[in-house]
Length: 308
Ligand SMILES: Cc1cc2nc3c(=O)[nH]c(=O)nc-3n(C[C@H](O)[C@H](O)[C@H](O)COP(=O)(O)OP(=O)(O)OC[C@H]3O[C@@H](n4cnc5c(N)ncnc54)[C@H](O)[C@@H]3O)c2cc1C
Image 1 (cartoon, rainbow, N blue to C red):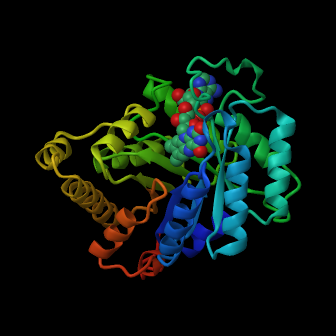
Image 2 (cartoon, rainbow, N blue to C red; image 1 turned 90 degrees about the horizontal axis):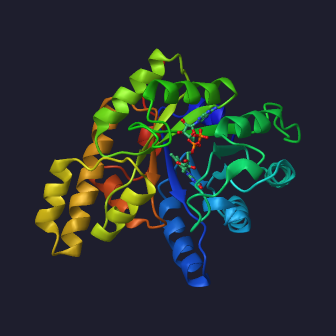
């Protein structure tokens, strides 16, 4: 479904993010977890694109499989890094033919092991250029073309230390045709609320959905800190994790509890959507639902009050 129709139908959207599995065993585990998460009836799910376009086929395969064998509505991520225009065109044609309605347009991480990769040979330098190209794509059966999402960074993107300039770049993506913003993960909701207000001040009117990633292990947290450069881990969370640190289950309890509190507070503050970075696992997300007293997403998606 076009993302504008999803936002029109759902009071609060709920979405789950997956990355394409690399081995047959990983794939099997993922499909089991997807079956568990499908029961939660999210508004949509999204599938990442490996750094430097490294999972081009795998992303496509997972998206098509989700489309054909589940009730889930997959949104493929697409990045500028390592692609020329003909490649992007072909990827979009394939998704359009498969009935995929939306895509998340990203700058993209540099290829693994090449932190200084020279972007000069890529067709698009910034996500805004990709948004423009997708917006101009004419091969989609929906007359509106693809619905388009873009990334936002509540705590700032490390590439642009000037936060005013950064907001101009975000606004440019929305002006170029982005329909919604999905945020980088954050652990302190105040960062999200302030980001939302700054977007409003900048004249950004599209829905902003909040990226949530529960800490499920100390190793995972370190990896996360590296992947989501700039993400701040509040002292209170670190203290709680430290108290639990010699017990893997306890660490998970702390991380899931923290994320649940974040969700509760976001819902109280009329968040437009919550996006769970699942890391291809289902248990943390399911535990959050359980603690929120939710059997599935229906009560979040269809609330009595209306957004303006
Ligand atoms: C929700 C989400 C999902 C993600 N999924 C993936 C994924 O699947 N695959 C992947 O590889 N990465 C993914 N990433 C990571 C993302 O690609 C990187 O963080 C990337 O560095 C920034 O992406 P962007 O789309 O914001 O890029 P851009 O909008 O291009 O911004 C990148 C940097 O360039 C600056 N900038 C933008 N426009 C200009 C301009 N005109 N002039 C000068 N500077 C400019 C921005 O301020 C920012 O600092 C994801 C991130 C998020 C938040």
